[in-house]
Length: 66
Image (cartoon, rainbow, N blue to C red):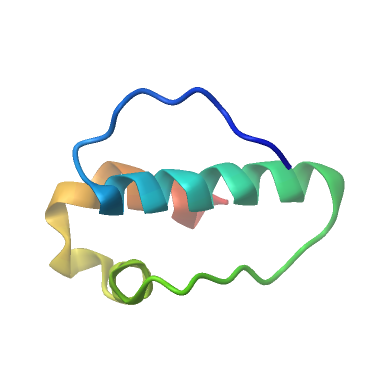
């Protein structure tokens, strides 16, 4: 779907999370997509156990609302 000009993130994991959020926002604008996937084990763990990742709380909250 293209790329966006993002600011530099704190870590690669922050970038993965931001990319997932961007993809979800864009896909949900055009389709009623219900499933999203990633091959990043840490990102999956982060979404499954968000309380264990307090440094990402703001970003995870945004994904939960989507």
